[in-house]
Length: 178
Ligand SMILES: [Zn+2]
Image (cartoon, rainbow, N blue to C red; front, side, top):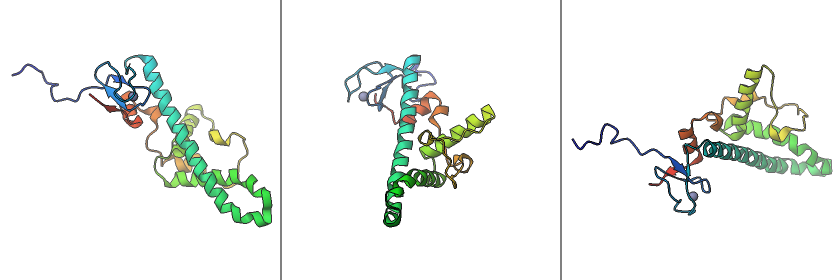
């Protein structure tokens, strides 16, 4: 009728993204309204790589945040023990943090801790070796009572590493501006 074809009602496709705020996308080239820097072309492999890096950075950041909340909690839980253990209590904090963090990941859906556990499980399956270490647990001492990756991996819903570009942009919170 009006010659616009069958795709008339489909949504505009995001083709450019602002890599300063990571919030603004557009179908057209041009500056981000908030940051006033040009949005970059998502068809450029280097830009897509940037998107992946940003997602990875955010996931790590939330894992460290989850662990630091757990560290504070552990400290609060252990604090009353200072009267008989003294400064030794602080030596226990990392181990208790580890256990608390993993218990938390077992309960909460899609925590970053669980996402990394699920990822390690996939890598373990691919390599045929058991990869269990967290980045924050690189000292290599296994605390007894540690919750294994298997026990928490199932609470992970989404690993940005496995997302296609479009859902990944949604995961990052980027929205089509115009
Ligand atoms: Zn921006």
